[in-house]
Length: 189
Image 1: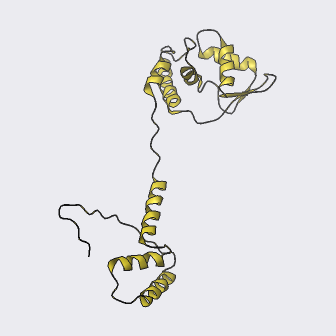
Image 2: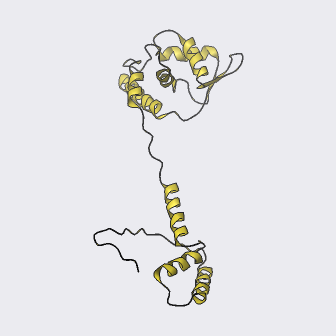
């Protein structure tokens, strides 16, 4: 007989047991109970219940329950590198327009997110016009090339069609877009 040590917390985790078919569960349990001579100990009864539910033993039942809990748990929230977002914000004016082209590639990538409308095909002239409205340093070509080079935009071979590549932005880009949207919203009022 194993006894708990005085002062130690013997934690017990509840393990739910679900039977899809109560009749089949009861028959399987009855067969096990008649096959094993009494008295049935606590652990042997728990193993019988687990086997009747389709598990190898109570350890298998516990492991399956814990695995399900881990899989159903929400993924940890993405955290943004706020220092990188801050560096990118230095490149924008109070109205949310890009003042200069950043020298560091991670900052460049952040500055390019959400520059073209989704699910729209634009020609080179329309893309350049849209990008001119988004920055103050008068070089839409570098923005167009960078958008294509960073695979944020798909471009046809002849340059007649540009389309934004739909993908989930990283946490830093979402944070930057949120802050810039607030700036633009407060500038409009």
